[in-house]
Image (cartoon, rainbow, N blue to C red; front, side, top):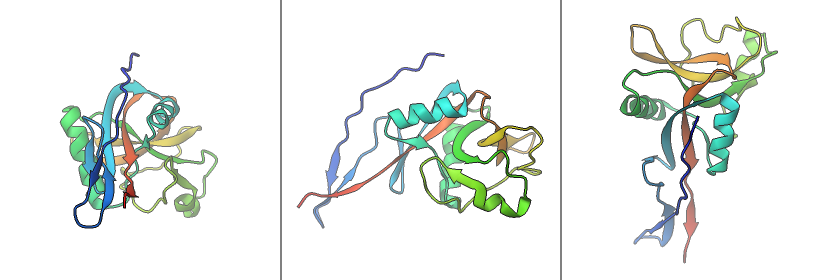
Length: 170
């Protein structure tokens, strides 16, 4: 797999009202709220995709509300009309079997709180030992975007999110 890397320059857009500075997204990334998102159509396993993201100063994407979820769906459709599965930053303990504890066993790779999900029906199902990561998957025939718990070694495209920042430039 060949992945072309780019050098990014960050630009600061100074606010005329309060003198603060908000970083602009790198070229080709989509700004949403205070984050920048992009889609990589270069299949990798979950861990390799996360390492690639970290090397960009980002992480695999996390979603925390319905608006972010809808934006991620739109981003996938814009880059992949076939709507194939793509890695996101959610992972869990593969030894975690207690359904009551699931919410507490999930972590986003960017360190943010697990507070929003749209599981596919019958997920997470733990049908395959070693499942530990989540991809965003389109339910067959329904075009419904849902999350699926899957083994991390499977190669998929992936979504990356770069945390925006505000800097005081007074």
